[in-house]
Length: 167
Image 1 (cartoon, rainbow, N blue to C red):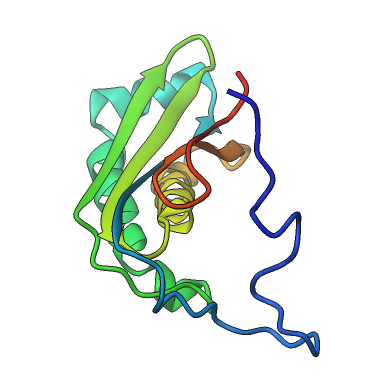
Image 2 (cartoon, helix red, strand yellow; image 1 turned 180 degrees about the vertical axis):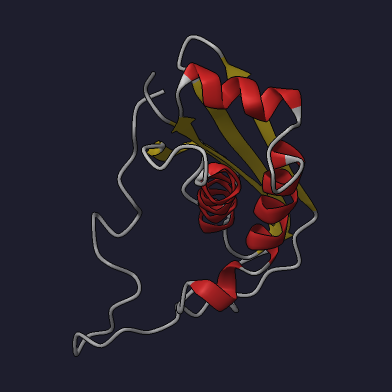
């Protein structure tokens, strides 16, 4: 599906008429089911990926810890991103798939809410923090790890409708 411009034709909704930052008023918007999916990659050496998969990293379970960190981050997004609304999330999943061809891990978060605003930032925050946690857990072994390609994959619900990134 093609990308759609925002309903404001590209207008920045977090900037008021005098150019000041503001939180958008969503009080008049209906509560609808909204879902967002984001993903990113953590690129390592093959040896570091094997260490992650073996469960022998000095700090413990790399993937389990990163998964929990991503979930917690999604729930606390409004504390990290100043103009985000606090949301009562109904679902957060963080899936981490080891990829020997990369080598590294694909991190994918799905976040769902029924409310007046979307959850794109929560999904992106979950992926970002999960990737950072993987780095933190393995940095003693490999400092050259790269975090790449964090982006919104899909958004469903709300007035602007369905968005899916081009492959």
